[in-house]
Length: 111
Length: 115
Image (cartoon, rainbow over all chains, first blue to last red; front, side, top):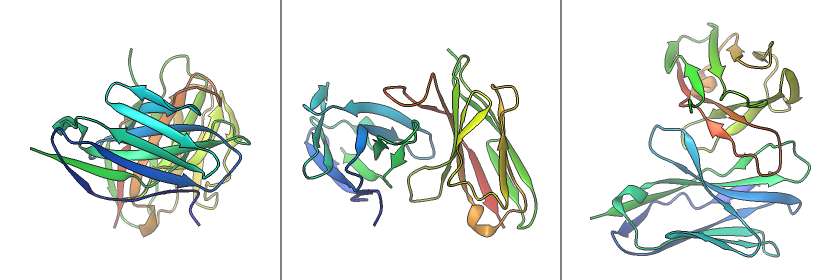
């Protein structure tokens, strides 16, 4: 079983619509959670950290469910520029900064 | 502020040849990481340095891969000899420190094709 699993998509989303997707993680001792964004043929960039109480950053909302070991990302009012692959990232408690990446969920926003 | 620099950006070699990649982290960042990202997968950590010491190299194929960060700044990753399955993007990242909320900043990567 993979340590971090994501639906690869693609999620085809009309501009202005809302899209949401999850990822699951296997290590219950995981400490920190993040969403990274990766554009085609570019490097990953931190989109947002995910906190236990859930958090928002503009049109982006992240949720964490420790009991069920999943993380979600919701994008409201999708823009064409939101088209990218979204990587779910987990940092286990026993790691020294080591990040475990999911394979990513591709989002395609269409006009 | 300058980001993480990597070179070369692209490299094509034949199997059994050797190749080396270079990374210059963000100034002042003590922690440096090398990741391998195979097409369709997320990045996988190969090795992590804290200053010039290795913190984690548990997923580094040590029979063919080596890395060093002699002066605690720049780093090189070498593959010798390369195999077809080494075709991937090699990403270097750096952070101020390890663990906690230290954000990792990635370089543009080196895209390696092994023929």
